[in-house]
Amino acid sequence: MRLPSLIAALCLPLAAFELPEDSRQCVVGIAPDWNSSKVTLTAYEKKGGRWVRALGPWPGRLGKSGMAWGDGLHPVPAAAATKKEGDWKAPAGVFRIGGAWGYDASIRKHPKQFYRQITTRDLWVEDSSSSSYNRHLILDHDPATEWEKKQQMRQNDHAHSLKLFIAHNAPPRVTPGKGSAIFFHIWRGGGSKPTAGCTTLAESNLRNLIAWLDPDANPLYVLLPESDYRKHATSWQLP
Image (cartoon, rainbow, N blue to C red; front, side, top):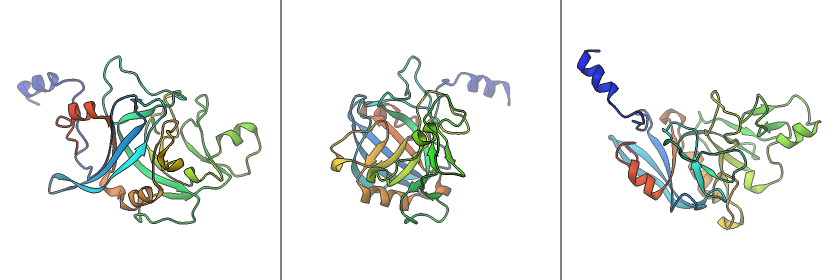
C-alpha cells in the first residue's frame, strides 16, 4: 500500500462499517425506541445492487425491557448499554441468521438450510459458567442431572415449536454472560406478549421467512430503533 493510501486508511473512523458485500438477503426489524418491545419486520433481497422488499412488513415482539446493543457484526458505540444474560432485552445490531430447530419431522426450507427436529436430548446451554455456553448440544442419553434438564430445549411449548437462530454472541466467539439462546420463534398470545430477548412473530410469517432464506445469500438480521436505523442507514448500506 502506498503511503498516501495508508494514511487515508488510518484516518478512517474506527467504527466504519457496512453490511457484507456478499449478503443478498436481509431481515430488518425497526422498533419505535430502545425501550419498546414491539417491532416491524421486513425482509429484503438484493437485486441489481439494490435492496428490494421480498416479505412483510409483519408485526413482531421483542424483549420485555426493550433492546440493548448485542454482539454481532456491527460496531458498538463507546459506553453504550449492551446485552446481558437475563436482562429481558433483545440484542440490537447486525447479526447473521440461519439454522432452524423445531418439533416437525421436516419443514419447508432451502435445501442447504440446517434443520433439526428437537428431541428430549437436545440442549441449548444458557449457563454462562459452562464451556458450552450458547451452544447446541446433543446428549447420547436422556437428561439425567438437574443441569441437563435445565438446559433442555423447550418441550411441549408451541411458541418454541419452530425457531430460527440469531447469531448474537455466537460460536466460535462466545463471551460468558453476554446473552444466549436468541432466536426468531412463534409469538405468544397472538402477539400480545413480549419476550425474554428473542424476536417473535406469527407462525405463518416465521414459516415463510425460513422457507425464503438461502444460506448462500449470507442472510442477516438488522434490529434497531427507528432513530438509529435512520442514523446508520446510509453508512451501513442498510435496505
